[in-house]
Image 1 (tube, rainbow, N blue to C red):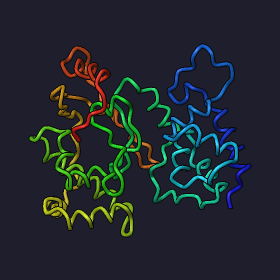
Image 2: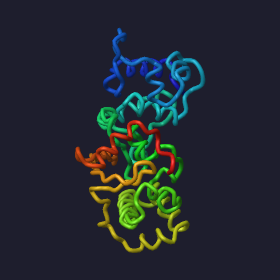
Image 3: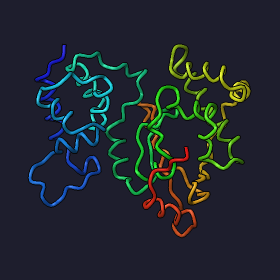
Image 4: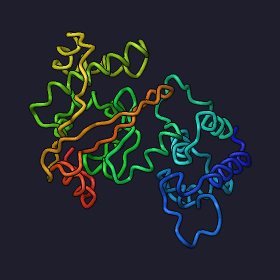
Length: 279
């Protein structure tokens, strides 16, 4: 059973321990107290301020596991804090070995400070967990997918529109790189894992995947410099810097271009464009 009093107290304590700067929010001249406001936390968690407020006030229905996961990400909880949140809400703590969608707080703090740069965090299966505003403008909102479609490699072989991010001549190298990363995840996680489920589904759905998979190419990798095809800006040549969190098997991707180049100028234009909608 949920302990609503402990749940409310824990959420208040975590909210009050965070400063606006910790989550990439401006402090503003009129802020008199420390910590985040409830409406700010609600925005970070992707829920209404009324819904979050009712949880802190011990009102309304008990939050679902999906909502608790969103709260854990929004409040930048550590894994231990996330597990505690689930337990006092009446659920078993998620299995860490199988659930890789909880962002490390340190990784989140880095991402929050990259608002003017295309950057995103992905799992070893290519599931995008969080993107900056600029990343959505460059690559589209890749966090909107559900089920197996969350995985980039699954979309690559089942949804031709997903390939529009890269110029057609670069498709073979990216397809092989996505497949090699999936094989790496499959070998680490084994049968019965999410990676195994994706492999089995793709072997049935995509003859192209089956052919590439049979090659057993484990050395294929994405180029350090990627060419991104944007519907309004054309092709951008960008350096993709990676930061890996080994504990969570997550990678932070940061896209940059040398100052003075055409691609650098195009990146500046992303700030005035909305989310990319062609993928």
